[in-house]
Amino acid sequence: MTVDADALLAGARGRRLCLEYAVSGAYRDETSADREAAATAWWAASAFETSGTTILFRPEGDTSPFVPTTPTPAQAARALDAIGLDVPVPASLRTALAASVDAAMYWQPPDGRDHLCATAELRAPLRRVATVIAGSPAADWWTGGVAEDDQWAVHWEGAGRSSREVEDELRRWREATAADEARAAAERPADPTAAWSGQWWSIPPSGLVRTTRSLGKAGPAGLWFGEDSMGADSATATPVDVYPARVIEIRGPEDWAQLCAQHPLDVTASRRQDWFRVTGSDRQWVIPDWAAVAAEADAVHLTVAGYLSAATRLIEVDGDRASVLAAWNPDETFWFRGTAARPAGEQRWRREDDGWERVAD
Image (cartoon, rainbow, N blue to C red; front, side, top):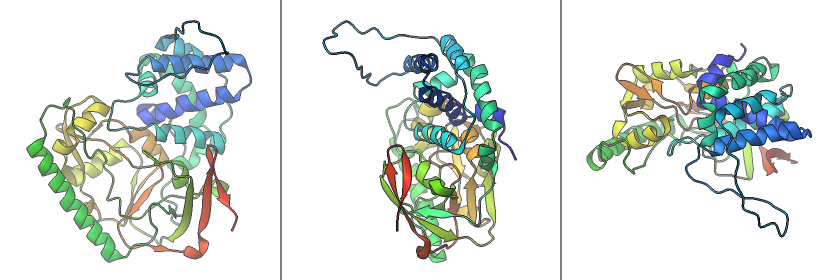
């Protein structure tokens, strides 16, 4: 199944992917026109920023006043339309996807580039990019379900857990989430604009094993795509045995909404301020009750296409309730049952520049 261009443009992360793909390709190009167009888009995005620092490199002795350019979204749209687009290949798509994932935020308002991508003026130029990406065979795997015969865990996530450990983890998570919600209801104001922050994620318990597929010589997807990453520069990737399992697939916002509707857990008090910042909406917020979901499934997998269309946005559950898919990485599967690692197949990886390279055994 191919990627749907409309689905990419429906999600903040999908729109950002398209912008990052066009701009990164322009900077790789030696033509000054494409680079200048990319710079126009950058300055247009900076106009939406409410904080930050601009670093200026200038010739020695140049003390002339610096006056930043302030392109409009319409000018940025024309600039993006003028950029020549490369034929998508795995490496260039991986770079753009990693940049979009790394820019996801749930504890503060969207950054300037996300704001720019959401303007009406950029709809058409981003559609041009989305169409090129969606038509690429290099993106076909983005819609695929969990690759049961090819699952890897990286060392900071853990690789093996017994069924008893999983049950205990889910129970502790459920108790801690309920306690946090009760505490927030008692201590925090109902004003969504109040200066409060706390738990903003909606993923299953972090102590569960989570896996991603291999990207061939590039290593597991989990090395490359991580929200709120800690910037690790080394990792151990371990293959995980996954026998046929009951896996819930999240392929878009509709699947997430259905999961929330079937197993709702109210988190309004604990998420109100953070999720207002990212969505601009004050709602009754729910997430899936993962302890209840675990009784029906062995795992939940988020496709790359599902991530790009669903993350960092308000997802309607029903007339009164809404949710946000937060902190779940592309192609990541959380396991609700025991898993077995195969240490004999471990691989060591290190970060080199902007990518990962395998360390020889």
